[in-house]
Image (cartoon, rainbow, N blue to C red; front, side, top):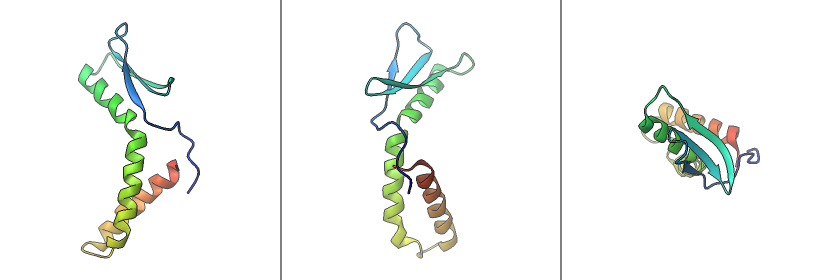
Length: 97
């Protein structure tokens, strides 16, 4: 698996009172991204920003689920579970860490 290239977590969402439709995603004093749009609702802006901020944690959880599920891959639905594990492995290999 490749070494991680992304900014380590935790990431968070910063609300700027001077820019109410902007959500900044950041970590340890670093701005990583901005979510903003005049065409979508504030609730959707918030949801998108939270999803992005949770990316490092989701990667950790995906890795744990993948490793936990490996022994179960032959039970029940072998083709579906094999595909799910292959998809998870592909994402883990793509993003490393």
